[in-house]
Length: 362
Image 1 (cartoon, rainbow, N blue to C red):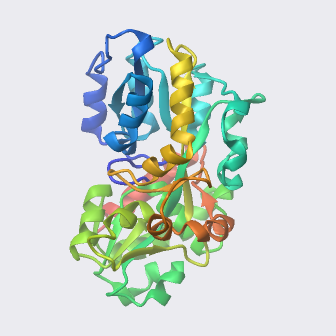
Image 2: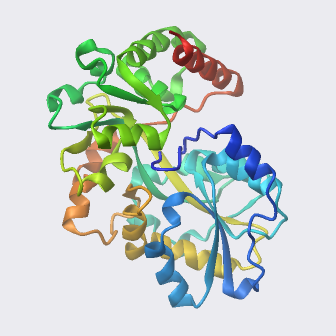
């Protein structure tokens, strides 16, 4: 998720126009200042917040030069058009770290210099971030694709069951987040399947439920459109939403909320990685350490772009912020959560084809 302009994690639907623009743009605004006083960062929109960046810049007397992108594919497209050493750090879906490692892009991180002991154990994602015995990223923020809703307009008890999404009770009052992987994951969990074990044989049953959700939905849209529909009251339920949608809007409308159904939610997790070709690895490591510090984690978690859970349990959030993010409930949520489906290339294409056929059906 996510999330306001990012689709995940994970987790990314990349508009063709955006990708074309990225491929046609060079040198991506690289700052020409010396490596010692500049950090070049490929980031998601939640890092493009002065409240997060300025304290680091002031403390280290440096400039953080950023390039914002959506989704791992778009990030890799930027790197294909960049020179080794152009970038120092990158935000990437935790489950996609291997893609960078396979291209020899990332530098192993010094685990002893990072607060792994303070992290929620479930989001360390050792199997995704440790490759060949070396850790190549650290999960900085996480959350769920689940059900967001207006608590003044729905029966909150209904939101505890994934099956409410294909029940006609709320027909015409729902929006569907237009990203196939988390929604397929949600449906799979709702019919008793594990997201990590999906096969082509599961697609007909999933397609049936997705079609019912689509029939119940007033609109299907990307992040901004679906969030706006919920925020303005055009719909009462957002399928695929989560804390990344409602936490930041709570002060304007306290009725906007989210829940993790009994079946669980689809976990997204984003990581920070350091480039092996970075010209300023000491500063890159300092930045990662800052973002993972209690103060940095609080600022990242409550970014103006989208909120999300900090992976460091010592994040310096106040009581109200912790309440909005359901900080105390995370251990129970994480026990019920499952990761994004990680299909093979062939199955991924079949999932996309299925999703497209449902959305285009009349």
